[in-house]
Length: 571
Image (cartoon, rainbow, N blue to C red; front, side):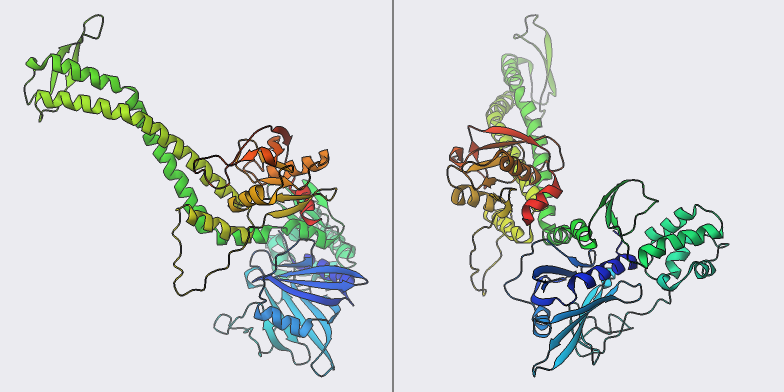
């Protein structure tokens, strides 16, 4: 991903056109680093997302849905106090840096006009969103508080003067002509791409490489023309071509890059491009952090069961030859007169062999002949008895692996609110210790909430994102004549179509969801079974949560399409 000064310029230009004169209706803070503004402009509501995430810092209009906390943070309440009901005057980029200023016109407590400024600094792990009183240039609050001990140049704390990030003494390429561009570079020093990045403000390595590529390693005039072609008109005149570039890793940019020959997907707006690219990435990162300990624990449990299976297979192999120990015991009993205590082995005639061959039986020198014979019989009975037990243990271990892998898969596609339910399930199943509740108020139990999707014809499709949701969906929510779907013999989510007679298109879309929320989400032609809820039952005998048996099913084969599934979610 390349959120450089040029992308910042493009999104600033777009937001200034789309949001200026818009009124702020609602402000939420879905996560500790993200804000969501609902802005009404010309009779239309738009959602503006601002993020100071260390890896996914960005700003754009979004179509994604976010779950908002019941209790707003202090920063969110401060924003509501100062910006609720305000009007957006303008959105501007500072020079060609990754810094945006959003200017709001509002009224203070006594009804006088007041101007506030929201500073959005998109600088990786140093990203921040800062509310500033424009007249006094004082910080009212920020999404991240930075003390003087953390940053010698400036502290970002309520009541402090707002100071811009330290200048890197770079030149704004928008204000430079091709002659100046050439003068700023030392062609004898080489590494021109690095020189361009270090000399010019907001130019990323990706754009620097594009300038070098278009110059084709030619003379000075070629470099002048390459710079001119990229800067004017595309950047100066704001003529952008938002696109996602697909190769071994996805990237996005707002200019058409000649140096890139792979697949390009173009978008109508910068916001649409950013929304598509970042959709789910930040949440996946948060889920990964929140569930990192669970993934490690479950992976270790799977490996433990796999090692157990290897040992059981070895025991089973021994059990297959249990008769050999019985035979050795009987042959030793028949030849007891040939053996004395202290012997390490004895040669006997094998009466069980048609040719009456001579066999060597190894003995324990510390035991009497009778004790050696009893040891063989004891080993025989133990192995014979263990064969059935080993088969049962193998079955349990295999079921355990299937269950644990299904939980891992559920975590991989979980929302933040799903993780706590998964943790509770593992505690109830005895895998994790329950936290002591001493001195804490009893937590109110909430009903599991399967995720809701909408088919193209508007039919509701529900998807269980963990076993608690799967059981609640299949056994409590769904009616007996509604359609239930699940990937065939593959760990995945329970899916229910809230219709007794869905169209073929809706059935296919529900199958897409079942395949996408399964272990085979990256495969093609995934088999998905579907049947009526009345034919789905939980087996007797203490089956694991979420495990069911079903009959009278039919099978569809689908290839998951994540972009299409995203549309089903956002309808």
